[in-house]
Structures are given as C-alpha cells and as structure tokens.
Image 1 (cartoon, helix red, strand yellow):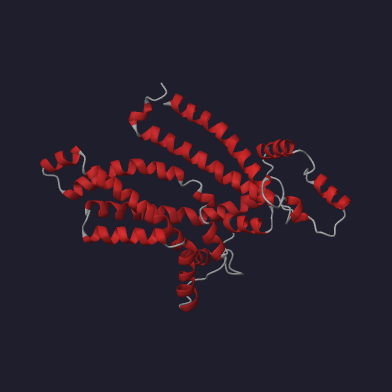
Image 2: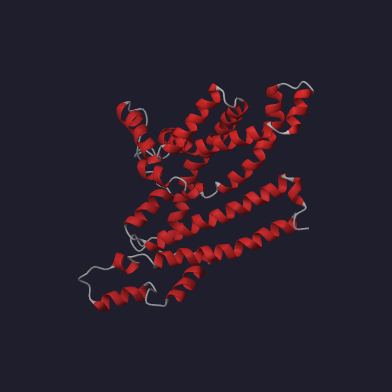
Amino acid sequence: MLKYIVKRILQAIPLLIIISIICFSLIKLAPYDAVDAMTTPNMSKQTVALIKAKYGLDKPAYEQYFYWVKGILNGEWGYSIVTHESIAKDLSVRIPNTILLVLPSYILALFLSIILGLFAGAKKGKVADKIIDGFSSFGIAIPSFWMAMILVYIFGHRLNLFPILGMHTVGNESSFSDLLSHMVLPCTVLTLSFMPELVRYVRSSTIGQLSEDYVMVQQAYGAGSSWILFKHVLRNVLLPIITIVGMSLPMLVTGAVVTETVFGWPGIGTYFVKAIQGFDYPVVMAIMLLSSSLVIIGNLVSDILYCIVDPRIKGMGE
C-alpha cells in the first residue's frame, strides 16, 4: 500500500508542473496584460518601460514563469497590481471565510443526499423515487445565482428575516449569532446546489447494490429491507462516495464564486471576480493555480483514502 501511495504522489508532481505552465500561458495569451491594467494611454513610453521593469514584465516569458514559480515555492505569491497588497496575505484571510461557508453546506448536502438517495434507490419507480428524482433534475437545471436572488427577494427583502450582504453587520463583528444569520441564505443556496448530483449518485449506487447477490441471500434468510439497506447496502454505497469527497476539495476554496458574489461574502469568490474585473492578473494566476492544484490534490487524497478502506487496492504497487 505504501508503494502505491508513493507512486500516486510521484505521478501528481509532473501534473502540478504542467498545470502551472498552462495557468501561466493562458494569462499570457489573454487579450489584455498586466501592463494594460497599470498604464493609461497618455503615459510616455519611458514611464511604461519603468513599470514593466518594476514588475519584471520586460523579461522573456520563460524567465517570468520561473521567477513566478520560485516565488510560489518560497511562499511569495506576489502582489496585487491594483491594491498592491500581498496576495498570500489576502488569501490567508479569505480562504477561511470561504471554508466557513462551503464546508458546513457540503457536509449538510452530503448527509441529506445519502438519506434521500438511499430512500429513492430503495423505492425505485415508486412515487417517492419520482419526487426525489424530479427534485434532483429541477435542482440541476436551476442556476445557483437565480436561486440566490429568489431567496434574497423572499427572505431578505419581502420577509426581512435574514441579512443579505456581507459576513457581519457593522458593529457586530464579534457576534456569533450575527454570523450565523448571515450564513443562512448563502449556505442554503450552496446546499441546494450541491445536493442534486449527490442524490443521483447515491440513488444509482443504491439501485446497483440492491441487485447484488448478497442482498438476495439476506432476503432469503429473512432479513428486513431496512436492515439490509442500512446494515449492508449503506456500507457499500458510502465506499465510492470517498471519491466524491476527495474531488470536493477544490470546492472548499473556489466552489462558491457565484454565491459569494451575490451575497457579498468576503471570500475567494468575490476576490477572484474583482481581480478579473480589474485585470489583476497576479491574483487571477494565483487563484487559477490554487484551484487547479486542489483538483490534483483532491484526486490524490481520494485515491489514498480508497486505498486505505478498500482491501482490494492495498496490494497494488507491491
């Protein structure tokens, strides 16, 4: 098992290098570059040249790339060309805010999806299954920004039950209850956004497990349907969900871009959108690299977890 884990880690390293090259190249191929964001048409050529030299933009692309990667490996993500603040410092403040919003939403969505998916799979073709499957189809079809605006209008504007902007009310930054009230609407949107695909995944896995021979054997011995469902089927359904949990790692950082923007939540989402609007390319590159790397790391984590819990994989790589 140890050889398999080491092998997967070694395979992830070249992928991370390729991702960094792609992220850097995409920014270089953009129609506007960092110089456009820092200069005006009436600036002299000498001034533009000084700005390029200050940020190393006068060097060849490959030198800029190696300088950028070297800084990231040293923990220096660079500086915003708009605010001139340290990107690493901004990320250290905003990432916890995004995790605070996304993590409870995803855990709740996963818990509800397991229950609804098991129930729908056990009642395949019946009214309950059709209702749950219809809910999932409806949830997949609805854009998250539209759902967010509907909730804002009903519960924030018409009923005035919950705040609709920010993370805290001004003057109540230390109030936990105020934080919870601000989390209700965005967390609801994220939970409803995460649930449909998870429900369908659990439902299909449940239907597949119920057709296995071990279920027929349990039924032959007189075991009840609830006992079979929660004692045996649930255990086998949860195993492939490990892959989904590992793949959800990027969501903890970039999974709430639209929702954070609608609700003005001070996380990575609003930071990323403002960087795009202001052509703040160092920030855009940093977030692109971070999110892409988390996809690779998420795959790696899910493979390692699967290797630990599934005895059939423990012998791989030996």
